[in-house]
Structure formats: C-alpha cells, structure tokens
Image (cartoon, rainbow, N blue to C red; front, side, top):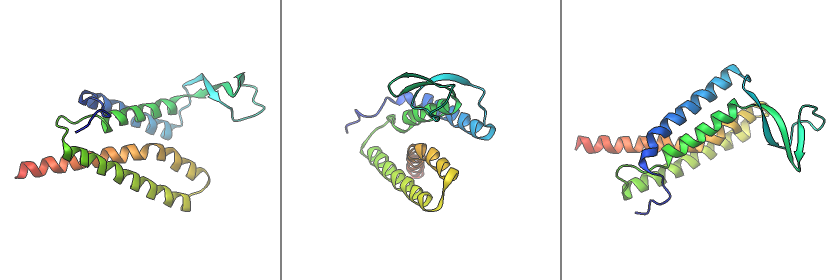
Length: 160
C-alpha cells in the first residue's frame, strides 16, 4: 500500500494536543470576543478605503492592527487536524486505507449537505458564521468518522 502522502504516526499525539488547544482557543474567542491580543499584521487589502490606521505598504499589501486570537486558533485547528487526520496508523494496511477513503468521502458529503442547507436557510451574519465553521468541518468530520470506524473495528476484533 502506498502511504507516501501520509505523515509519520509520531505526529498523532502532538496533533491531538494542538487540535484541542486550537478548539479551546477558538471557543474562548467566540464566547468572550477577546481582542486584547492586537498586533500589526500584513494584510491583502483593508476594510476601509479611508482608514487612517492602516498603512499602505506595497501593491495590495497593507499593515493593519488586528486581534490575532482567531488566526492563532485557526492555524492550530488546521495544523492539529492535519496531524491527526493524515498521520499513519501503527498498522497501515488496505483496510485502513479503505476506511480512510470512506471517511473522507463521507466527510465531504456531510459537509456539503450542511453547507447546502445553510445556503438555503441562513442569511446575513449567521451565514458568515456558517462559513467560518465550514472551514474546519471537512477535516473534523473526517477525523471523527475515521476514529469511530477504527474504534468499531478494534472493538469487533476483540469480541471475536
């Protein structure tokens, strides 16, 4: 079986740590709306054409002051999710590869079903939040489904 696109199994545990810290940071940021961590950041464009606080640097790039807690949470969720979702199992065989493919396909179907529902029935700022969460759902659905299938497989093999 070809596993060259998967990362080593040793990334799994640090991945869970990074993923959970990212989710906790994101939840904290949503609940509190904390914008204490404001630093100058490089940005492609800016919100306001007449903003006196943003400094135009070069071409489309601006220097803006931004609360970076949501960016930190997003990076942690994506990095941790990739380490968990795409690291090799201790035993990586054809069955594991099939479960991985099925989980990813299932996650994409579920993600787009939810997105289609949201497109039809959510509007304005609610739709913005749907799109924010939609950035992570394919990865998270894949992880949950794949881990569930592995758990079920291990449980059934212990019962036999």
